[in-house]
Length: 314
Figure (cartoon, rainbow, N blue to C red):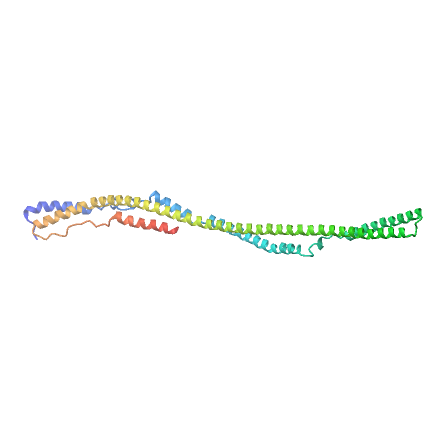
């Protein structure tokens, strides 16, 4: 197609501009590269550090719970031992009751004491008999009825007094033995009560250790959940800040890219105008490449990471 005479100079000018524009390489460094990628926000860094620190953070609480569990098991073992010892005290207390409970507490020397006392008593009564005989001789009644009556009365009194003395010593020994048996029964009852109290104390201690163990587990869960919430909050806020920075960088990138391709768009439009004036068909208009919303894309990705941080510590 021939170029009209009135457009020759204009076409030549267009050709020079197009040659100059298309012969010069586009410096893509002005709108590409890492400088257009937003860095991690300080809150995101803090969230990542918390997440790293949170790994294994339950260990101290688990160790404390295990220690409480071991102590609780020991307390239960002591309680079982105390329960086993209760039977011995019950048996000992039972042996201190009944009609014959006093016998184990009778003094082994009581018979010897009674025999010696009675022997001395008999000797003293023999001397009294001799005194009656001597008095009868002195009064001239030796062998008489008066002497016999006095001797009979004396011997009868001696037998009564001897029996009373022996009974008194036997009763005294029985009373002492019975008192010792009663005291032993009371002692065994007190020991039983003390042992039972120890058993109850050990059971209570075991329960306290169990509560402590559960508290340690609860503190571990609370610690991890609270840390997860902090990480989630920091990660989400940091993601919002990062997405905003990314949107600004993407806008700068778009501006630089538009400026780099502006001469080509202008020349394209210029050329289409010339083509139309010369009676030809205009070519397709030059268009920049469309880009997705950088803020929305960055924000969606960042919020997803924030939720991932939170799930790690649930």
